[in-house]
Image (cartoon, rainbow over all chains, first blue to last red; front, side):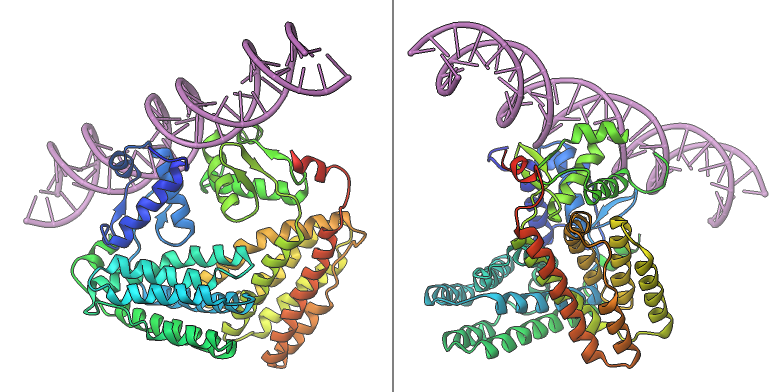
Length: 223
Length: 223
DNA sequence: ATTTAAAATGTTGTATACAAGATATCAAAT
DNA sequence: ATTTGATATCTTGTATACAACATTTTAAAT
């Protein structure tokens, strides 16, 4: 196509976006053939992306029966959230300092977040960005990679939640409290608040995922 | 070839074993063509395995310049160890109980470990198995998957360490103390001991990786 | 009408083919 | 002898081809 990035990586992002956008309903099949045709590339990079997404927990795959978008499952989001809370909090501990410049950037992201109404995708992007900036000073790159990988799963839930549930916008209050604590160099409190933030957020996603929501997805998932 | 597992998975294991066996020196290139020929399969499943190993941190890959075995790096093993200590300790917390049957199995593994002298690979396998059994009761499957994934990295260091350094066998003392604490239902202590176990082990691997050890590997790594 | 059998179709998993780019080889020039 | 340039070879990244297995459709039998 255009850039200097391997096709598999571009395709990876395309597929992720499409899933987060909710194009593919939970339970629906994902055919490499179709994607290849749609994206105008061959099956090879598409399969590479699909295999990666499967390993990362974003897709399911029954051997020989191809890939599919997994149904929303409150157990899964609970478990993933538990891990994310724990390792983000570890990343926070490992970060040596939080310069004012970075805290300002966090505030700016929050400001944008508050102005964003109705656009679920953008909300999720900004929420992602906030966490990324918060932890960007952590020297353990492996840890940050791991967090980014896991977040792809929680992202799918959050995007669907914001789209489907009545909530239009995310509250930025927890963010602000965490940033405040960091400004005071009160790591202890920031740490506790971050864990709380995850627990609350995941709790909400869980109870949303638990109830048999909208339309077709359950039925499709069975087949 | 023979089984009912996708070739990519069989190939994945073969490559991992070969790396852990130390066949490929750190810094040496890994050509999919060669592997395909050696294993008697096509490049396709080999590349799938190589891409996965790269994502998991077991291999490096410069875009267009193929895959290679990364040199041992004390920073990397330190960071991976930090993560592993943290999430294994989380898995321990989440495990509801440790029935006597499981603790007995741990003891049996330790017994085998004590009898194993000189066979680095077998040592590492048993050490792996011990941790796997310890945490098998953890209900968070995602967490266990993540641990298994990360352990592939630390495994490579441990295998090389046992092969290269003077140490022939692993001490089973830390294992035994952890198991004892669990028998007494003293989770607090078990928890603390597990973290210590990781810190010590990683520390040793780090100081080993830090010194410019044996022969060719540094030179090869540069090219 | 419902169930079973069989053929046709579609998808996957793997193999092979091909082109662009990287690396190595070798000769000529300083 | 070392550097430079040109050529040849290798390797990767992607595309296409093919065979085995799943699924769906169609037809026949009860």
